[in-house]
Length: 313
Image (cartoon, rainbow, N blue to C red; front, top):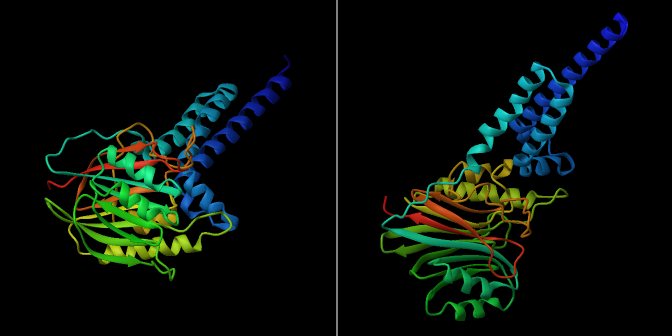
């Protein structure tokens, strides 16, 4: 090989390694600053909610590093690996399961209009003492109430959102969250360990073509939490936002997510072999999570969540 050919080869390798390093830094930057990307044509919404999936780019970059070669390439690859591990890694590690002496078992599911009674029965069979259902179809309330009459005789329903409880419910209040019609409620659950303030929520849909109503509801909900002086608060339901969505921040700033008891994220939608988004949540303040499961119950496009909440503190 001539000297000029070797020089051209070296130059091409340097350029390839430079662009590879830029790709690594770009992916890491996208992970860290995804909420600062302008939400033009729904781009911010898509990137925010798919942020943890950016980790899929790391194996692709690793294969590229094998081709590009060079120590600097593998050092560059560490940048997105560390960024992903710090930002999203802890959420993938299951929480240690505890068995608190005093606990509340709560379940939530978007029942997709037609699966209310079946979901209620199956969630009760899983030991849920409080059941929050969203998107309850017309005429479903009597069926759900009849299904739970013996085990969960206390109920409160607003629009398409309802709570059925084995414990008495007090101080019920509908919440329109700025929409002018009710898609959420607030109620006190009178447990043996004292009252627990509960919010049941079904946020408006979020699509790249528009999510203003959802954003308004989440901001309003954050204000409710900020001004609620109840010592123990639980919020459960379909928030139509993942924990990485910038508009979920008003909720996440006030309450903490219940700890998932399995590896990975508690992805709840769509209910397929490979769900993509965790848009259903159980959020807590003043109480601690003793574990949360994802359940495949009823005929809905959402998985259910069932959380065990420690009331002993």
